[in-house]
Length: 474
Image (cartoon, rainbow, N blue to C red; front, top):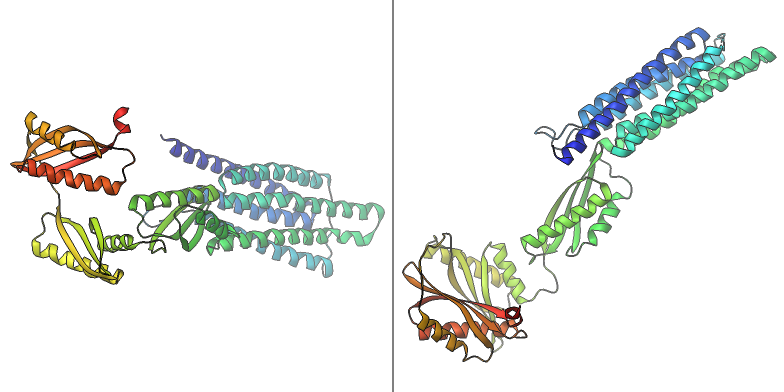
């Protein structure tokens, strides 16, 4: 099992374990509060019992949601099942608001229309203090795992149970005031219990409003505040990125999905474009963790392009390979010569049609060009079989002596003669001075090829590999 698979399994197991513990604790607290609430007649405790009952439902939903949300993406859910966590949090919010409605309704009746005797027993205080202790323990456990795996469902549960501590404390204060009303005969303090229940409802409304905002934002794919601007800032700093066309962010469960389009110079190679996209993904993952990032590259012309770049860009649009591009200024008019590589299985008519289309495209892209002459070359699609390697010491000596005619050439070595399809192929290495510019290297190679073929007309193809003088000293 890979480390990634093990990590995912460990995450799922830990999230389920803490969610299961939360269900067990919620069940115990709810039962205790209902028993004591019915025994004492305290609306504060009964409201807390109902609150805890809905917390139990929420805990069960959370347990179910973390089991479903961690399932991998499939054909019907290409973005995974993470949204189930957000949906479960939304259901929890609705349940909490229903709780508030019942508490406010019952508190209003007791304050203005109905007198209910309350018996603040020792067991009532014991149950509430035990509830506070258990809520503190499970809220800490839930928050630790929620922060570790960025789980919104577990965050919602942790938030519920942390506020339960405060609502239970308010109920304890209400019970204490009712007890004080009996001992010290202060009748108006008897209303402390429904007032405490209203405070519980207020706390629940506050928690629900925060949770509702988070869940609705997640369900509506709202981007977290500031994240888009931070992504743009990081991506703009990637070398090679000219512009950011679009950034879209959505979240499902604990994972972000980012879709962005970046503008690159149109003469950037596929390999360079892929390397830039990888760097963009790396920087976004530094910000958002294990985000699913799709990068779309858009070619753009840049002001630094020269005429050669524009010609090559036209060839790339036609999905054609060109080389040996030459531009001559003849009496104020520009003439272009280039070599075009085409599939060797093409007919001459097909090849000529492709090249004509390319030449027209180049003229549109570079209107200052007066004429274009294209040399059509076949692009090999088969592996050539060499009949034999030929040993001809006399010809080798002749070729090496020809190299001595050029002041730029230090030596000619590794001469190889091969028979391919009944033709004689020559390849050799030519050492030249280190500081020779490439334009001159190309001229010397061309001149050598001509001299070699003049000295040995039987040569069909000549390939010369230039090497710097320093390289041969290593």
